[in-house]
Image (cartoon, rainbow, N blue to C red; front, side, top):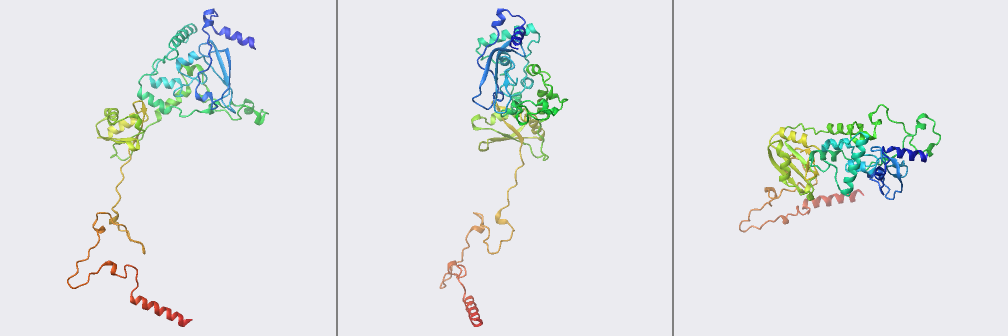
Amino acid sequence: SFEKREKKITMSSKNTSLGNRQAWEKTEFPVLCETCLGENPYVRMTKQNYGDACKICDRPYTVFRWCPGHGMRFKKTEVCQTCAKLKNVCQTCLLDLEYGLPVQVRDKYLQMDQKAPMSDVNREYWIQNQEKMLESSKGLQAIEGYNAPQKSGRAILEMLAARKPNFKRNLPHICSFWVKGECKRGDLCPYRHEMPTDPNDPLSHQNMKDRYYGSNDPVAEKMVNRAKAMSLEPPEDMNIKSLYIGGIQPEFDINEHDIRGSFYEFGEIDRVTMVPKSACAFVEFATRDAAERAAQSLYNRLSIKDHLLRVLWAKPRRKRTQDPSSSTLPNLPGMPGLVPVPGSSSSMPSLQPPPQQGQRPIYPSMDPMRVGAKTLDQKLKQQQQKQQQQQQQ
């Protein structure tokens, strides 16, 4: 089997001259995404120089093989580093390294047109020239159009991008014997015991070259359709003409002028209110139509100073609560009434008129009822009740 593999690698290059053999790739570490690498920081890899032919350019390259984690399947690099760097993709899953999305989705929203030659001779010549360019720039040469200022497109990509690595992609394959009902390993089987998806599902027909070149990729088409379906429904209240802009952190250094520059094209703006404490702002338009156009165009697409911001419809203002002093609710028995509002007439102490000449002034503290003292009649009634109780005994 080893001799067959060597023969396959030798025949993969159309010309086995010394010049082409020198162009075979030999590297020390692969270009991988976080998902394919796994969550174990101490992953162990095996390296084999010229272990296989690249699935894109058919040139021999260094193959790396590793296990991403416990219970996961062994993975290996599928394309050479030159092909991966030209598209800025992972060598295993062929997804974009920055956004974790298929090449077709990235190229669509960044308006990138990278058409590599498909024929054998032209492809090998083009790959060699691109590899020389990468070597001369020491790997710092960015792919064409990747750093283009496509603000709206980048905002959509950040919306579709995976926030966290999806380690479920590293799970073992489905056991075909279990599907047939013939697997006798039980729990010791290293493959998954699950039913496969519908064979007519487009996602079950994925091609590695289609994903790399960004054409007819069913995963990419599904993501593009999902992005088109996302929309912001306007509220029923036609008086709402304001939009909420969230995620404005202080370190972003975004001011009112920057927000006006992003919204002025949709219509006349009455005011822009910045709320630094809540890290948000409110944009109020003069007409409802202008607010709807802005919400439809900038929903999940607003990017100011390379920062993605949230755009939502503002909620109607709450009505002010009623003055507690004018409340008509009855007071509970035995409980004091509401505290009067400061500054109101009820909060001022009632002043007694000054006494006339020869009369003794009367103060509230002189009233025994106010301080809880009992009157003479109440004392007499209490004594009579005690005497009656003693006679009954």
